[in-house]
Length: 109
Image 1 (cartoon, rainbow, N blue to C red):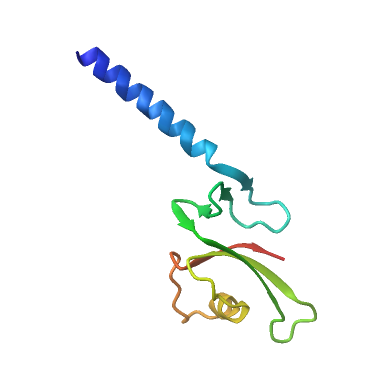
Image 2 (image 1 turned 90 degrees about the horizontal axis):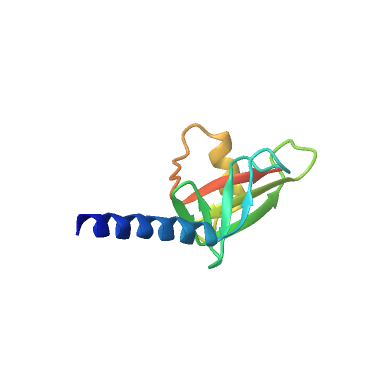
């Protein structure tokens, strides 16, 4: 009986591991084309960074003060309304509150 239980547990773990890998559509690796951290696109249209899944991947563009060219950010977010100004303020300020579960900056050009 114990041997059957262990075999069932092992099979279940193998199936679970296979399912999570099958959910990944694409992996964006850090160090390539402005990608700062490794993150993944999942087959249900969501995005994953570390252990957090985000419903939105937002591409934001704008000009920082005194900059000669536009900056481009990609953030994974729980909110659809994250702005370029909000992310820029967080990056430039030491007092702006930041909740990593709200959004995370994954690319910058």
